[in-house]
Structures are given as structure tokens and as C-alpha cells.
Image 1 (cartoon, rainbow, N blue to C red):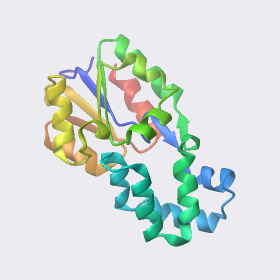
Image 2: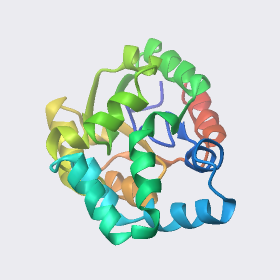
Image 3: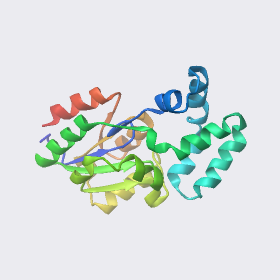
Image 4: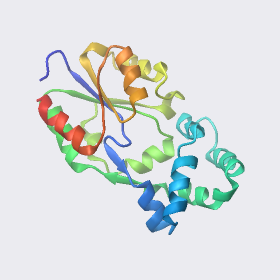
Length: 202
């Protein structure tokens, strides 16, 4: 085991699972590449998405806010939310490494921003659940990364020492908060980047 590290904490999206949002729009929605690019860079990048992750409002109300703000994409967005099961892609090689590290003695945790419905749908076939020692997802506490309270909620619930943790996330602002709290971090650039790191831990 890596010196001093006992706990591996993973984000879910773009870490333990992948996203095919562009393929979903191009193939399943038959959207033009130009329209898909605009949809991805505006609608899907809107900070308002945090309303889903906080899970404090009914999904229909959040969708209505998007429709009001982006009327040209109203039907596309309704379709996107309804068909969210089409977005995730599985990463079995990563899950195998997580399992190997669990067997070698590490404890495995999740720390992720997700609504309850999206999380349930996106992770329903994920084998990494069998290796979890705990998780903190934003819908559980109505707090989101990169704000410190959701990190602290995980640490407190499972009595974790941040100095014994590595946190994996694809967004630098999220790993920065973890580093501020005393964790080792990896800002995940790709599936291969993550795999290379995990293979070297133990």
C-alpha cells in the first residue's frame, strides 16, 4: 500500500464511468454536429445544472427553468433529461483496478455530485458498488462540490483522516478543495490517466 494512504475516494462521472453526451445527441437524437456542439457548450455547461445535483427542487421545475432560458433547445433538453440512461458508458477496467485495490487493503469511497434519479440510473450496472465502504452523493446532503461541506460530510460520517485519503476527480476545482482539506489528489484527465495511476499505487 502507498505510505500513509488507507482510503481512496472517487468521483463518479468521468472517473468511474464515462459520458457519451455528444454521441447521445448525434446518434440517438439525430442532432447536427453544429447544434450538438452549441447544446453541449451552453445548455449542458450552464451552472444551473447544480440544481439537479442539489436535488432540492422537483425535476420538472428545473427543466422548466432550462426551457425558459433556452427556448430554442426546449424539446432537446426535455428529451435529454428523459433519456439520461443513454448517457453513461461503463469503465470495467477501472472497476477491476478498484476491486484489486480493495482486496489489497484500501477502503473505497464515493464523493460525487448527482441527483438521486440520475445517480440510480447511471450506476445501476456498476460493479464497483460491491467494493464500497461508503459514499456521499450531493442529493443526500443537498451540498455540492467544490464546496467544503460535502467533503466534510464524508469525512465525518466515516471518521476519515484526510491525510490518509487520495481523492480522484476530473475537475480541478473539486480536487483543489480536497487538497485544501489535507487530502492527496489526482485530477483525472482520461480513463487511461486514471488507470495508469491506480496500477502504480499497489
